[in-house]
Length: 197
Image (tube, rainbow, N blue to C red; front, side, top):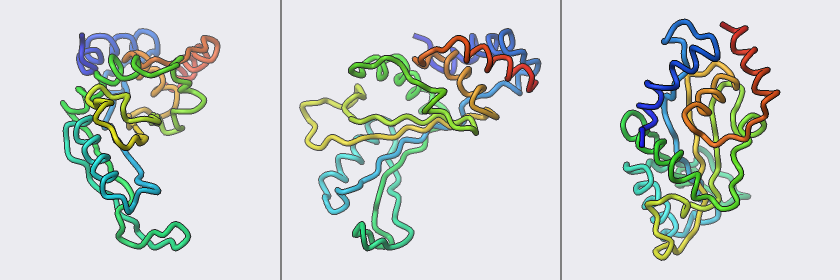
């Protein structure tokens, strides 16, 4: 099984040149970083849940998470300034490559009733970044379901050097992300990318 980095170097660069008209290799978009984020929500006072979230992010990413704190107090949500409200991990380099390889080849295929990602309508923003939410953290292979007491969601953000939605879509599609394909829309996007060159 090729890693995402190997796939990018051996397949994606040549495909982007051939199909989208890139002349310069340096202009071809690439992935900069991956961010995993968990909001603690209603469980702010539940120390066990906070430990579960920390354990999950450490196992899934291979590095310890950073806890994010509230910048100001909001009485309606019982949040005080400085209170821990979430946890996040930012991956780059080898860890990012390992995580993305596992995500594409193992995690997405494990999802129940999964019919592909509707990336163009929902998950890619105008700046060319991809976001996806997992309802249950147990989807990741490192998490054993019999050990789980608290199930929580997980937000994934992939930051790319893409200038727009179209570039990000083709970059991730050629890397093997299971997108729902609309051929007419895809052809229009290809023309758009070529015109921008």
